[in-house]
Length: 389
Ligand SMILES: [Zn+2]
Image 1 (cartoon, rainbow, N blue to C red):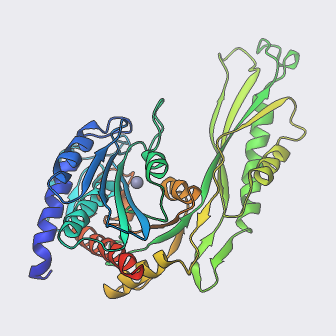
Image 2: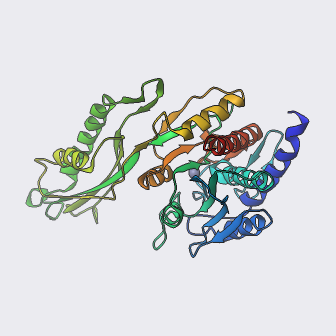
Image 3: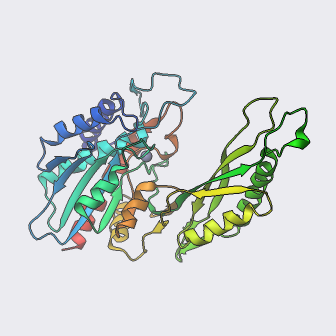
């Protein structure tokens, strides 16, 4: 690594280590929120903290021509099985930092802080830039919501970059230009209870549920054939809807025939699909399976940013300038991109961190992915500002 890159890397690693050491499960982001608000007060950005503890650092040039959000979530997933070290004691090795949230996405937060420092020295000319540090992306918490909703409603905007880890571990960075969305369905099969010594006197709700689970498997096979390319010149910007049974609950005791079986279904939707169409397909899967109730969760449209967007041009140029190819993809499930798109913005993801290590034991961030992702994030922001001039 060359000398010029060593100082920013030291600062990035120091901040990443600070933030990994602060616990921030969804709904418990107070510590990281306070750390960021305190640090950012020393920059030239206007810092605002809302009632949910989302932090915004804002640059607003006079006569700005458009608004860009740069967003990252402060929460981490809970600690899963398999960790060999303490998840909140960051370990710095030769080429990486290990700890919970190292890549998903405290690396992104450190990279955003770097961009704020840099923009404090060389301010944007045409773009109002809102750096948003948000709560509750990983998990839903009663009474709280994903902070991206607050950002969108409070500030509006034209463009959004999420700074989730894009590093492939081999020097390459893969941006996302949109995302599939997620529809949850809950199907309840109703039967009639009886003593298990006389199963024929009851109606066992597990049997139709099992048949349903099998049909969902066939439905997924059918969806495989619906893959579709979304950008004619980029084969990797493709979408493939999927479906899976993920939760099943039934039974109260080993000697009672169950009268109720609840099945949860996770359906990943493609751009262009509608609730009407998808809900009909799931309703069709329960046909002939006795008495059922089907409930659907919140619908959001999957999103893809058009290839001729100024944001895409800015992102492409930043990658090419860094000596990397532009190889965009469509994400299978980035909720933040979907929320920004619902508010009418073009959305894009590029950021520091090692993409494949999140949500895994001994999560780590390679320094090459930390520095490279930060530089390309900054380049993308600067390019967009210049293109508006
Ligand atoms: Zn994340």
